[in-house]
Image (cartoon, rainbow, N blue to C red; front, side):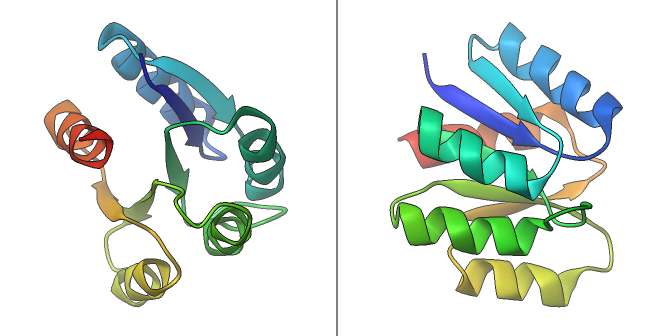
Length: 118
């Protein structure tokens, strides 16, 4: 099954996504910020990354650019809060394949991942 890297500074969200995706049969790994995500991506090369935009140490946009710079075929889905439309536009221009607005439904996350893996 596919490897998913979940990146968010909110532990409860990482745990929620890990349980949700684990139930769907995915192998899930967690990172608490963009800097950790970049190093984990280079080491593990996950199939999909779910990444929050706003995080300490290194934000999601910077991490996205570093990951795409390392692997142009990276499949990254950005997790955004309502009202971050300009950030979403920049993320898509920078290589994000999709975005999910928080709070999200299980169905929306599954559909986004399935679409990228097809």
